[in-house]
Image 1 (cartoon, one colour):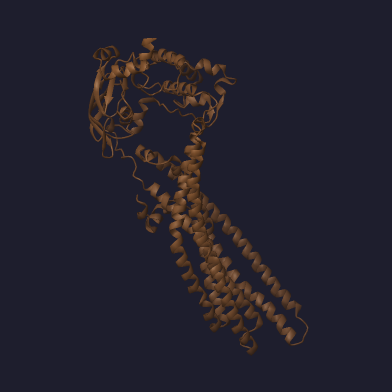
Image 2 (cartoon, rainbow, N blue to C red):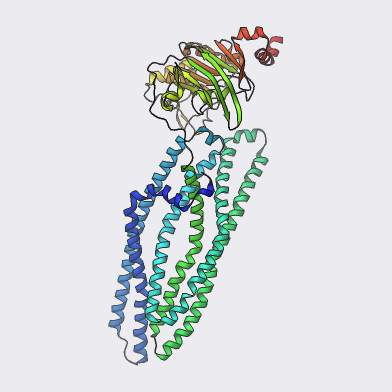
Length: 590
């Protein structure tokens, strides 16, 4: 969804499902706010009554009626206690409703992310996406917690204050009412100018999170290549952009309060002069003049709060816009009930006249190949030839533009993605381990696996001996980045995880790129055993890992230019032979 298309109607339609279930909490909170406002509007009148009673006693030169004063003080104390109780109840129910709504909204965002196609993540920074779930939801939560009640309270207080002023003196009320349109005009002019800055602030905050994620994710490489200065410059650039936008937004919105306060002081000064004249003539009591001035301040309070409310509301609208945009993103093509299922997967894979491209740029063009069950197929070629794209299509991270891919004769689009991906085991070049024990990281491949099965998978991946040398063995806890073991050892753990899943089709995408020569040889021996009876796709730049492949596909510009075994392709002395010789010429000359 385009940001410009995020309207108030769209926002309400999107957020209503998360707010509606807790509407009683909001209604009770609103009821308590109204009660608080009523009590607040009565307080100046009671205070004025005390002043008037004292004033009349002094003017009449009689003893002060302490019983009357004490009675009024008890009423005032009761009103203050009632207001406090109402505010506590309001805060409890409002906080409970909002936090439950935000909990559901975060869940919805998480579920939405799981439904988005891979291309969505290919075009966005991870940190920016995370910023929507964290910063933007928190911004919305804070705005609802504070602005929601303040708006209702402000409107109610304003109406009651005007009513109470009108019961004292209409002429003075008309003078005080000039404050409201003046304040609204000031607010409108400033908000119009600051709104763009608040949107820019939230966008810059998202980019800052993305930049930080990238910098700390590649911290070792930054240090290795002495790029600390460049990284700092990148951070400072986006940080300065955020600072500039935040300053402009906050400064402009903060001008509202002092300008409204200036208007309020001018109004009070005028009312004080006019009210004093009325009091001298006996038109009003001194206590009523005091109460009237207090009501002007009650009018001023919500108008002055517009400054803070403006900043919060505008930040919230910018955040809501990003949240709604994410929630309205186009999801992966929804699957109908599968027309077919594969009861017993054999592993025959067929690409039939497959065409695919990212946008208008073609990557795969009329690609066809038949792979028999149990074959080990190696895919080689220069960068950008389409090797990883083939795997993405096979796993349905992307769908083909035309043609079809079948497994055991069944079009993969006739299977649910869950069923399709359960057929595969996959080991990527970029290892992914989570914070937890080595045992749990391997067991992630099959959560119901027994410990003996986890150990057996580790042995097949030739990582069992390494694990036993660790102080805590399988119970050793890996940190968040898995940096307390080597890159090659991390790779072997992910391979063990794939072995544990025991898939019928195994995909190794540069899986041995981080393994040293000794471990690579051990891994090749293990792979020969584990791949028996399985179809395997191996993407590799290190051609030493694919000499024993049943079929080698050489890709260039999305087309198969050569196909055969290692020996057959070497005899052809073509593209594969050139790649092989460029890697191993130094070994042959040694």
